[in-house]
Length: 215
Figure (cartoon, rainbow, N blue to C red):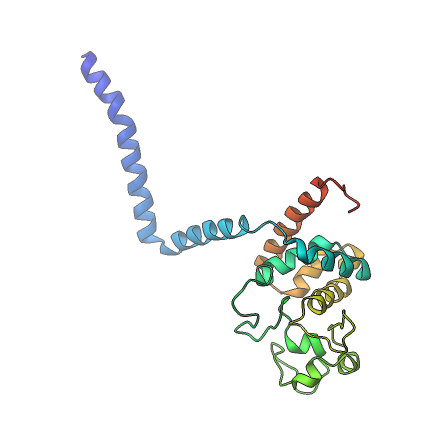
């Protein structure tokens, strides 16, 4: 009798495990989308928690741009991380046509008033106009010549970061509306969630630095 009782105690966890695995497999067969979403969620979690160290060489640029436009420098770092993984992507041109370190659509960089700018904003803008500060000013773009070399180039790290700071500041970040500014940068709830995650992570790192919160 005692042997039967022990056997039952040993078999119960095995039965529960088998039942659970069967249920998971059956759910996967009936709802493959659920499995895909779970896998996607795990990948997102993994992606988010990698490369959370800000490259030191970019921090002075973030800080200078943030001071110029009155926004947190860690917000620029978060956008840079999400847009191009701190400029480590193989190509700095997206399939949709976004360009440079901070992935500006040409019409946003030069200005939506530029002739032919519509749709997603890829436009058909000659290179000499795309990087001309006078043209950008005329058409209300966000491109900035940060290093004073006479061109506003989304592929130049200083110009790109200052341009992003300009855009975010004018989209609400300078008034403290961080989430609104992020959504303006890319109209995607997932994008907002990702940038906010890195922004909060980088803010925590900033506060933990020896220099303290005023750094």
